[in-house]
Image (cartoon, rainbow, N blue to C red; front, side, top):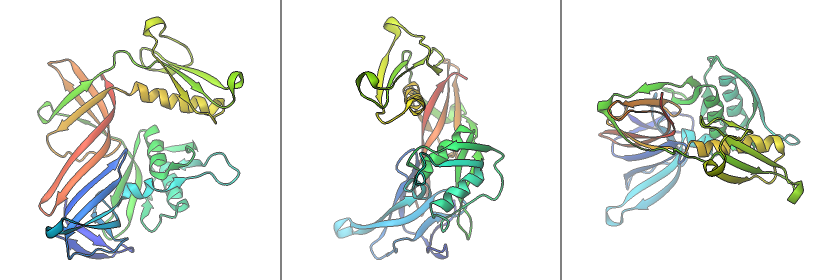
Length: 321
């Protein structure tokens, strides 16, 4: 991976760390890191720590002394992804939503500028090739909002610390990686029966309350037409009390999709494969007739001066081809 670098707030290199322990995670949650160093190694708040030409890095926010007689300093902070995760996309005064329109990389650039993160990030100057328009969810984090937008168009939100410069953020094409059966093992829990009826409750009271019924069919496609009845019906309610009908349908569809994505898979990969958040893995077990495709949702890194150990969490399990 190369050297682990400390830099000031202008991304001017300060030093290379050669005695440290790093634990870092980013993706669907956490988006933070801890960095443990010897007691005398003072690191100012706001310092950037990173591996060049990678998406591993962030900024120092906290410090604590740990370890008693064998004391060390443990620094904590937000990863690059965490910096965007801790800033919210809010509608302008008088508007219901914050809208977007244009090439995905141009939208990323506008979000970076709007949120005042230009000292850290720069959007790719190249066009992504995907033009989109619509609204961000209300008060969503910039990381979650941009990730969702990219995912909806078959892209992934990519971060790369440029050598001698800022962190480039771009919409890259998501990749599906084929797993060799010698390099992985997995445990699967599949729901043969799943929540297929969601009663969505919106604004209003009692008989005047907006109610929308959403259903999933055998192919897990969502509509307002019921497929499963009798003992095959599995229903839940969803309370979103301030929503009008259109917003209730949109949010209810997302909630029902969460139920439909409830199949779980624990996948252990024999070695770090360089996967990115938003990529997918495809695995086939011929002996058992099992085939899965799953999305990489989280990267977990443990590193020191000797090297790195990387693991991945996956979600959105899809059984079959």
